[in-house]
Each structure stands twice: as structure tokens, then as C-alpha cells.
Image (cartoon, rainbow, N blue to C red; front, side, top):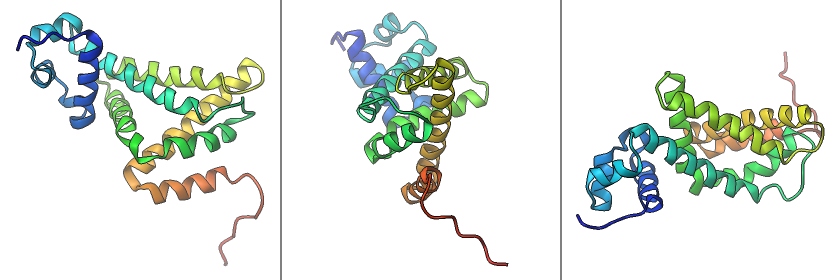
Length: 188
């Protein structure tokens, strides 16, 4: 166990471990064993488990923003345009594990567990702030539309992870249909 790793290499290993077993199973010991180093080396870079989890979630957010940035070549007018551009990108199966970690953190936050509670509000606020940069209009309009887009995307992604891609595709089609045919009304 003499191999030395940089903080970035440890963080990459921690992300891989979290993707395999979830955030709740990410420990100093598991990461040290994975990287064939001592627990003390992990603690040197990440003094607490909260530091480790917060850092992993930051990487998750950065990776997802990188993926999503390709969906917005030009600024959009509203949340529907944002979601319509983002959905085909984020609804790919290869991103499900990253969104799984995001929703694991959100779930732990709703239970009031730290560091998830503190980090989740920062994650959501970060997403809103980041997405508002892809909307035209006044700062208030941009924030409102970005907030609505985050709410829609989170709902669709959660539905995709829990109910499957077909159910999420049906919901996205209905939510994003802004014109054209009238919805059928049930017969009496």
C-alpha cells in the first residue's frame, strides 16, 4: 500500500466507488482499499466524510453541467425551450448513474441528513444560477425560467429513474407539447 495518489486521483476513485455502490456506501476504508492506500492518506486530502461527499457531489455537478452545456448553443426564451433542448441530452442511459447520485443526495437531504441537507440546497441553487445564464431577459425572468426548468427536469429524470424511459418520454412529450393538437377530452 505504498502507492501515492493526488487529490484528483482520489476524488476520481471516490466518484467511481460512489457510482458503483452509492454515496451511502462510500467510506474512507472502501476508497483506501480501492486505491490500495492507507485510510490516513484519504483523510489527509478529505479530513471528514462530509468533505469527501461534498467533493464527490461537486464533481457530479460539474460533469452534468459539462454534458448539459452542449444542449444550449444559443440563449433560450423560457423554461420549456430549456427543457426541450436539455431532455434529449440528459435522458441518455449513460447519465443515469450520475443522476442517481444526485437524487440519492436529494433524498438524504429531505430526510434532514448532513452533509446532504446543506449540499443539496447548494446543488439546486447552483443549477438554477447556471441555467439562468442560458435564458434571455431580465435577471428575474431568467431566474424564474431556470427554476421552472430545474423543477421539470428533476421531475422527468426522477420519473425516468423510477418508472423507466418510456414513462418519462410520455411525460416529457405531454409537458413540452406547447401547441398543435388539442388534448382529447374523456367522453361522458
